[in-house]
Image (cartoon, rainbow, N blue to C red):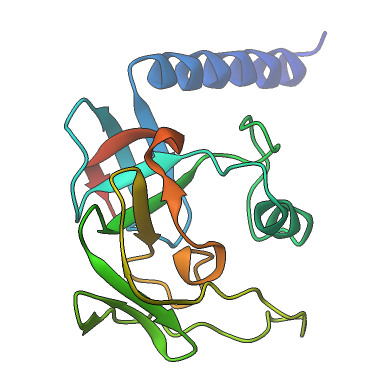
Length: 174
């Protein structure tokens, strides 16, 4: 084998080993625009509003459609997607309204929450509609903190807490 091929293979093996080691200790890299891009670490903290979380999307038609349309990256969750990063915008007891004007939590409209009717290719987007709905103990409203194009609760609705893998804390963001 020539030197360059050996170097390439050993670099690939080293990269994979580092990625596996980081994953084992709970390091996650977010490259999506849903929350600030960066390096995060899993936390044992109890979830609460404002926390960043990672979750595996449930097996349902909305997430399957999102995967087919490439709104979600491929990965190891049961539907074939990667886990998603979002922020908890609503939790037990919060009153939410979700309509064509945006998402409202406890009478405050969330910035950047107005849903689009279609994606960049002109395909119709689903909408989560709720009117003065009080979140139950098992339900979370997960939103993007910075991206008006994020595939979040305004499209897929509420997520059961059982789907949350972990709260994540930023180590380094850019």
